[in-house]
Length: 111
Image 1 (cartoon, rainbow, N blue to C red):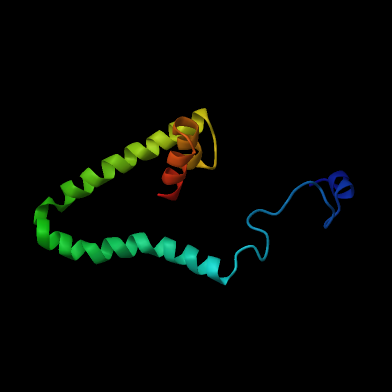
Image 2: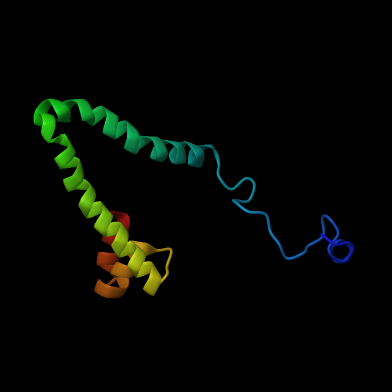
């Protein structure tokens, strides 16, 4: 960085740039616990259900995983296309509300 830039915006001054991430104190203990559980839950569910599933379907498990993965892949691709056309952080709630009305939007967002 040149000296001219340092003189214009000395350290600690408001240069228009903000720190990245959440503001301090935004997430409390309860929020931290909820975020932690939501990150662990999918892996725990998979590992807890893997044994009984293998016992039930045996060598057909890879085909069942693929059958479950394909719809999720298509949903993800659909969300990507919707975001390209109409970016919105509300995703399902906002898109369903615009297309079908507030009741369907609420059910989609809640689900």
